[in-house]
Image: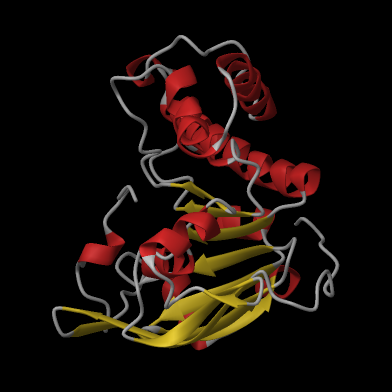
Length: 270
């Protein structure tokens, strides 16, 4: 666990108030509320289709709530225009399920993409920043490789390198260990912890990977039936006897979750 101080900031990094969202008339979020402290690692647990990714996409403004509010460092973002959201999104890094790398671009150009879009810098500065980001995720010197030449774990770490390129205050991780073997999953967990400590970022992780959750989290929330049914400190999770947590761990499906919906597609790019 990252061990952030509970009162790191009086203003939450992210706050959601009574978020409701439906797709095709099918409710996915049914009044979700949370407060994420600056500098902590907050993990949202839940099964497939439970709405975890939908929560993330509301935080960054990729989805708008049917009702409810989203605040980022005290600013309400759920009603901002697309132009105003561009500025807010610069403060976020997002790591998608499938890394969402551009297959036709090498590693350098993948990481440079947000820098070219949002950072006023010359090519030498961009190259230096790309190298710094790769070194930060333990992949120095692979700038010229194509995504097809990378292992699954390396692709994930390049996705993280791209997410930190603009020095965000908040990093969102959407199922960061999906498709990885245990060794690479542990490596990604270690990277999340290291970045949280080294960069002092706020991390929001959605996952169904219980070992990852226990390894990285300060606090954990369980999303079932479109609502948070549990929110505890990670140290309490191991010995907690909670009926819905037990159902989740035993693999019982969420009876209210749709099989799929537009906001929960794996690796969907912004």
